[in-house]
Structures are given as C-alpha cells and as structure tokens.
Image (cartoon, rainbow, N blue to C red; front, side, top):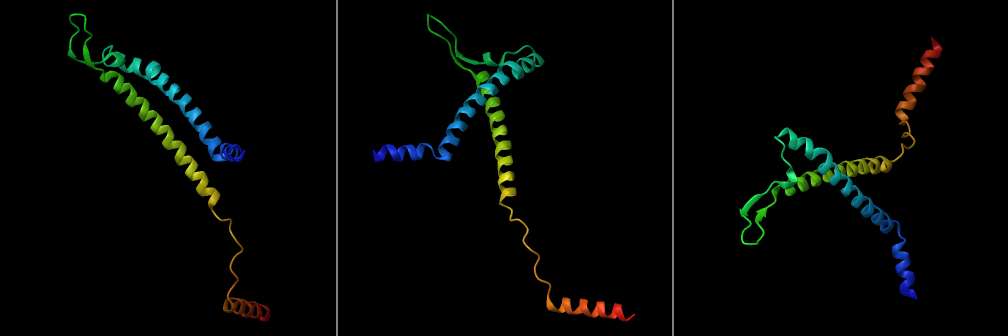
Length: 135
C-alpha cells in the first residue's frame, strides 16, 4: 500500500499535473498549427509561386516501373513540417519569454523602508531650521 500512496503523492504534485496539461495542450496546438500551415498558409503561397502544391513537391529518384512504386524524396512535406516547427518554436519562445518576465517581476523584492538618515545630515537640517527661525 505504501507504493500506491507514494505514486498518488507523485502523480498529484503540481508539476506532474502541469506537465500533463502542457503535453495535452501542446498536442492540440500542434494540430492547429499543422492545419494553419496546410490549409491557410500553403495554398496561397503555392498559388503565388505558380500553383504549386507543396505537399506534392518531390524529387523522383526512380520512376515507377514494372509494378514497383517510385522512389522519391518528398521535400514538399519536409518544407511544410519545417514551417510547422518554426511556428510552434516561435510560439513556445514567446510563451517562455512571457513566463520568464512574469517570474522576474514576481521575484522583485518589495521596496523596504528607506535607510536611516545619517547623523551629519540630521544635524545640518537642524542647523538650517534653527537659522531659518532666527531670521
């Protein structure tokens, strides 16, 4: 029973739950970015460069023959995946930058009481006030 209690304590720690939520949101975000690149960004970009479908761009090394499939390097899909990666990396960079800024601001020590005034300054102020009262 001790192992179960230890596992429950581990699984319910804030960091583990936060990590699980992050992984799930990250997977969903990856799908959104893939859809953005595949359905929103790539078609207009392909149209601009002459009606090219990036997903179908490939370098054929050996054409299909005698019932065998062609051998090709699908660099178009690679380009789309690189765009996906760059968008996800950029978004992650922004999120981490914002989190670091928030953590830095929360770590700033609240301003403490001002340091005590040195004795010579106090004495000079008393002399000044005394001279003002004489005149």
